[in-house]
Image 1 (cartoon, rainbow, N blue to C red):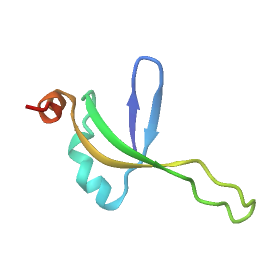
Image 2 (tube, one colour):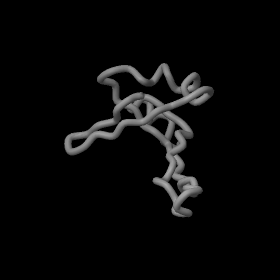
Image 3 (spheres, helix red, strand yellow):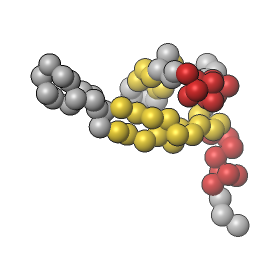
Length: 74
């Protein structure tokens, strides 16, 4: 489990299996990271038939200091 926070709020996330192995080197305390995510619909609760909370899939992470160089177009 890791926490992402800014000046106003904080959110806790969990990564499992391959996602954890792929991104664990970015999960360093007090580091600034850029996360590319995909939000998917939640699962349907079999008991109630209602959707659960949306799921967040982490697609990519990088250190914030590297964002400008990797995103800038020549």
